[in-house]
Image (tube, rainbow, N blue to C red; front, top):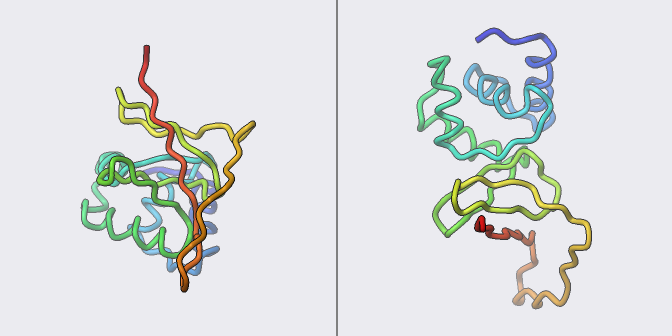
Amino acid sequence: MTTSHSTQERSTDWLASAGLRPTRQRLALAELLVGDGQHRHVTAESLFEAASASGQVSLATVYNTLRAFCDVGLIHEITVDGAKSYFDTNTTDHPHFFWEDTGELTDASTERMEISNLPSAPDGAEIASVDVVIRLRRT
């Protein structure tokens, strides 16, 4: 896989910002996720498909690496339908649109959105985050 220095540098810096060692597999996946500086919503399968062109990683490695990236806060996991997970490189709090016909997850605007009157967390717990997924159906 031929990449520019800035792509490699951006990917290496991204991993270093979370204290992750830049292994060959992590770098290959980081380049696909953040190498161009754009945010992405991927599934493990779609990332594996993109990475398989280079033949550098197995599907199990993709799953393990995505989990490691989540664990250190580099990406955020969004679960749709209780089973399908998407991974978002934009880790700020923001809502998503889920397009039922294509299975695509995209960012939704926070303009005019207000989340209020959340229930209190049970004793011994705190609310870590609130995920908003708005399901869309084309008309």
